[in-house]
Image 1 (tube, rainbow, N blue to C red):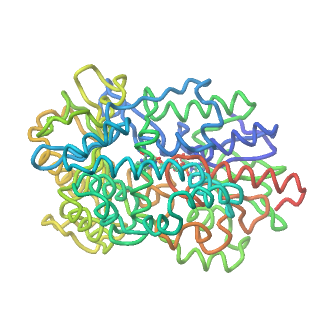
Image 2 (spheres, rainbow, N blue to C red):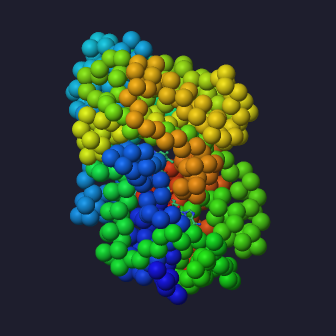
Image 3 (cartoon, protein in one colour):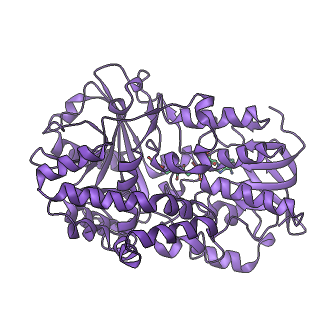
Length: 527
Ligand SMILES: Cc1cc2nc3c(=O)[nH]c(=O)nc-3n(C[C@H](O)[C@H](O)[C@H](O)COP(=O)(O)OP(=O)(O)OC[C@H]3O[C@@H](n4cnc5c(N)ncnc54)[C@H](O)[C@@H]3O)c2cc1C
């Protein structure tokens, strides 16, 4: 498709943030071009049939609790563009070696009943915790997802906070994930659920901040579930694309952007191998901070302080993923009372701490914590009846200093290393599901480099656009500054997960960038 010579705005990158930002600008009547390097839109929200033609595999992400509560996505009415959500019988499960499970069910009463059966009294404690969370969730989510400072939602959150114990509740949120739930519960179920969810981010389980992430995901699981788009993750991206095109937007795929031209301190054009597109108003960059400030914008067009601050930018750990087509369901050692969509595999909370500490200190984990998605259990349309489309992933260091296991892995992730580490990961599943290997019809390994090859934002296999550690959050994201999408170049906005509020599919980074572009344009200051 020939590119237009000039538009109001170019959005670089069609991940969820780029798609949301593009929709917002098109809604405002702007003439918007969305340029994507890959042949498909979606970024890390895509599906394919490479593992087996009869199976839909979510290539990257799969479950979207943040999308379910994020106004940036819920306000778009994507159901009108074909989006439907599927839910597994249970949201989340953590199997134990003895065949029992810690389970999170959509119905709070059912979760509480299961916890109480495992340890009398835990059911009531669960209701008490969820009850308090429901009070603060709207203000908290609003504050997290809106630009800094979150004035309106911040006031709402403070009011809600006062109703649930004020600073006492805040202090509880700061307790590391390894210890957060043990204070309230006698059984290990809630601790396993919270610590397992904390492992989705890269904060060590004995550090402050991990408990907040773990509790946030656990409580979202209880209040909205972990929904997955019916038909595959791609369905969410296609709905965003269809809505954008219906609003008059144009999409160019298979078109990597090679540079952003700056004149007089302002972004004036976007460069591709097919030529240059001039912009009248703004460029939204749904690309990683490393790429934006490390090449797409010429260093000569950036203040020296930006380059200096980017030196301190830290990636989140690399991801190592295996996708499976299974001939039958996973043969778990014990059948869960309700089949979960998401499964966390780890022997115990201390085992998860050991994993996160090995990862944090540069070692390939000996017994990796494994995050598993039972996608056909969640959405029967993903594969033929009686089979399971499954994925499993864990994290490995960006820079490998050694192997805490005994395979001598170096982090080259060549074919031999990739196969051996995939076997280690699979052995973890097998330990909780004897006979798992015999159900494998085919598997696909995605090393950190494979992931980056399919989405340039996944630098070194990182999945959150930069570390989620507290020193790289809020006004420190992507580096110390305002925590907003504005960049030192006028008319250029950082719209990816490298911006506040970071990774996960909520579209807020894209929405915040679009709002900033519209705001400055309205003021005619072209910031
Ligand atoms: C394996 C994996 C599992 C995950 N699981 C979940 C999950 O279950 N739930 C959840 O909420 N989140 C999950 N995440 C995180 C989530 O997918 C990301 O945080 C989210 O996709 C970030 O959106 P984004 O739009 O900022 O970037 P991306 O989704 O990465 O999209 C960026 C887009 O920009 C394009 N691009 C980059 N450079 C250029 C260029 N120069 N020119 C043109 N195009 C360019 C890329 O090709 C890509 O399409 C997961 C991520 C991974 C990798």
